[in-house]
Image 1 (tube, rainbow, N blue to C red):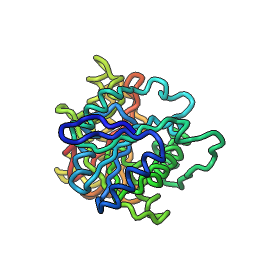
Image 2: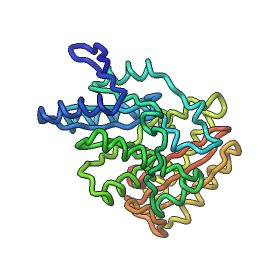
Image 3: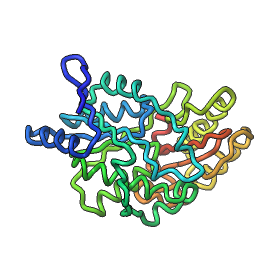
Length: 294
């Protein structure tokens, strides 16, 4: 276990389950509440807001960095997913993270590993349909992290709304005593939702990507002006997106916030979610109609 100086304290780097359990044991015995922030690294302000919320609610914060191969399909971007561990270390330390968990794939999935967490119908649409097996990978790695850390709470962003919903379901269905804290989506000044995959967006693609948040913003504006029909909001978004031929829409979904069930009439809590490809980059975003882009 390596400690990196960080002002008057140190950022602990843990690479094995044994080190992790020793770290959590010491904090738990001292009566401290532990928060977990699971990430795949290449940190941005969205991840750091999860850290901020963790620090508000807990005494010790551990952030995991693991590019989880189980949640990538065979033709997806596992090999080229952005990575920059020195930068991540510095950002985590500056924001007040107490420990990093940096396992390898061999640590998380030893030879012969075969048990997986397989979700139900909520995972079969949207991202689950576009990325078969994705949520089995997500829930399996999150379950392993929950077992290893045994946190009092874990923070996740609302941008991945289907993932967040499934994690809440898993905690409920498996009777974990873990508080799941959802944190609002963080955006660039021009409205683009922060994502590690934004690193792929260059030049015209970066400008075209703004079509997603603008379409969501248009739905929010229509709702504020009195529109309550889901089909009308969807049509408004599709019409706006047709002005951007570089944007290939995969889905627009208008759903209630607990089970992500489609609705015909909307209210302020209704979620509007979108996925689209811009060039070679797949992006997702969502809002609640009352809050808009925040």
